[in-house]
Length: 144
Image 1: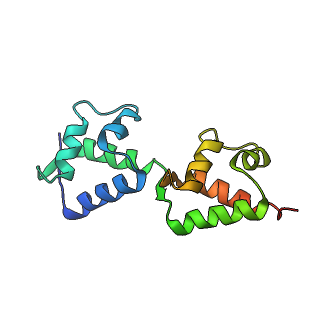
Image 2: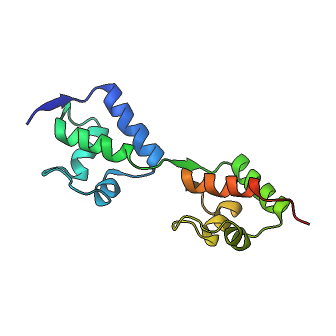
Image 3: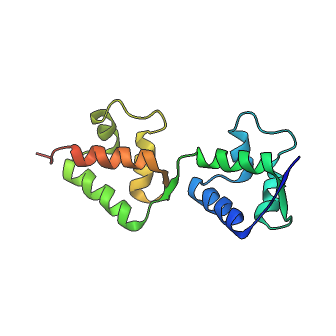
């Protein structure tokens, strides 16, 4: 099998994708189909920890493609949390009534999740879910 040198740029890309997706190697492989034979999370960790200087080309290509296919996770900063709470207050919605107003909504979204975002108990969100909620709130009228 052909091997690829793990340059600083490649390792940096892997680290960035891991951080943006919120998935470690084990979770990435667990959610992936058709994982190449011989590839496991320990191998990916040796790349990330710079314990090896090269990787099988098919393994590296698979891991990069799998990470790139995962929607990014965004940190919910105090500023973003404040924007969410301001929009909830402006519209007069609770997380439950908000989702009722935004039907249909993504399967992965629920009122408990929106509530945890608003209180700070959950500090990150899938980008597409956050955007769905915030875009939906901005499109709603002010409370009467």
